[in-house]
Length: 403
Image 1 (cartoon, rainbow, N blue to C red):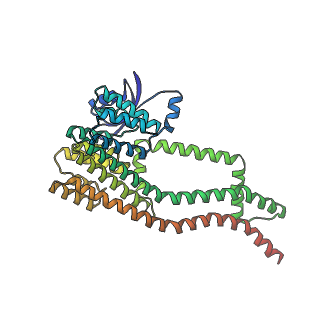
Image 2: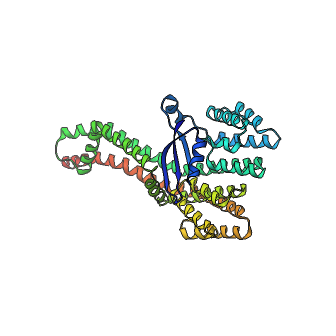
Image 3: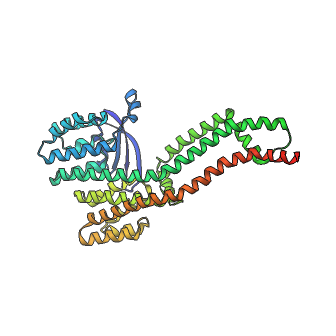
């Protein structure tokens, strides 16, 4: 028996975090589901070197895509699942993935279904992955579903890359500006400060501010400031993992100016449509598909809206009705969902929504770069230029006195 930390949602959609004893993650997840909880994550707790190094042993999304495509190809070619998993375990270069695949192979060889074996490793195979595989097993189209899973992962990876590229440029420029300002305040300003002390007299306010910040950074105040920033960052990360933090951050990130929030929203909508469409196409029941889509949306606002929609659908409403009432999804999305429900091609319409918003993200990233570039130039120029001007103001006054 071990101790497992789990994250789940109750019948009202509230996030629940706790620990429980169990024999393995799969048994714990089954016990939690029997209590009416929607299981999001189950991880074994422990101490020692293995646990300390575990965060550094991750499976890259690209490796998982390759594994999934190769497994689909082998199953389509007629290879038994156990044999296919054995071959893939030998070929995989990622040690973490190789160890997990070997454990999955052993479980399948012992008589366990592939979806159940994958479910025992939630740190590698998410709920979306597991449920689509389970639907493929039930429908007898496992190879086709695995190819769809691989495509879903690739689309998700590309979407994340586009959004990160939109945010990377301003972040890099801002960090460079802060480092340049810190260098000037720590090494350049003290030289001017000593010169001004020798000259005497009253210094201009901007100069006194720059010298005060310089004294703070070069003394023990700098260490205190660094500690405060590190502590603040740690507390912030812990806070956004709480229910209230996820709620506030989920709303705030969609309201970031300079079209950044708009780009993030389009990315979230694309992910919602792609995920739900893939689950519906794989044969996952709609209520379960919405729950999985909600927990994998990556944004509290969309997650909360989908969980409310699930309750409305359970009462007999069509999907587009509760989506319209939440005010999160644009009219185009709800109308296309309504058309998909009327024509019986919901997965097709969701795919078109995803394609549209993915192209919108790509266009928004290009537009965002052209908007942010001049803004960042002004910001960097203001920071560095302000420090330089504050140092030269006393010299201008000295020149006036000499004249």
